[in-house]
Image (cartoon, rainbow, N blue to C red; front, side, top):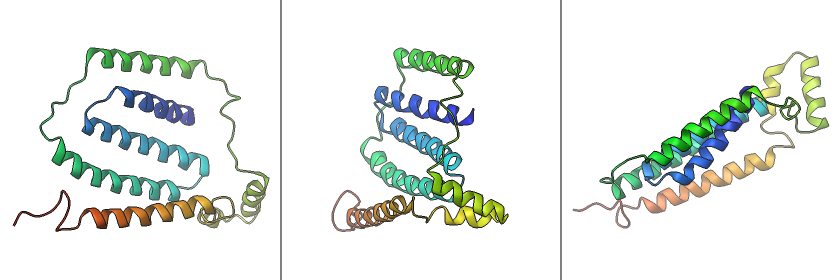
Length: 175
């Protein structure tokens, strides 16, 4: 039930992003989507380390974006039109009704493959779930995801260092 709620919330916030025109509301919506995505990934992967690291990465990126947006669009008014309010209301009602008429076959147990299930059964046999949670992040199935996250962090570091050069760009000092 919780997986369905988080998936529906992700879809709802993705649809709602099309109707936003203020940068702060878009940043808030990306933060909410990141939170939902991290909670859903922690349920699907059965470990919280990956989702915690992913949330910290996105939060750091959003903080850098918040600095630039607050400098560029500081005097814009924040308002929600009547169409957006009614759209939010109807989509929220649709999401609530979909909970009552859900299909249990669609929300079956997610697993990566048979090797991962054998790996899980082996660790349950030895009653050592802590090692399973730590080793699942760095196993054969998720090493590409971990490598992609490392490369993303490195590129984000280089971009932030280049952007925040004190003599050039929007964050230069006026002395």
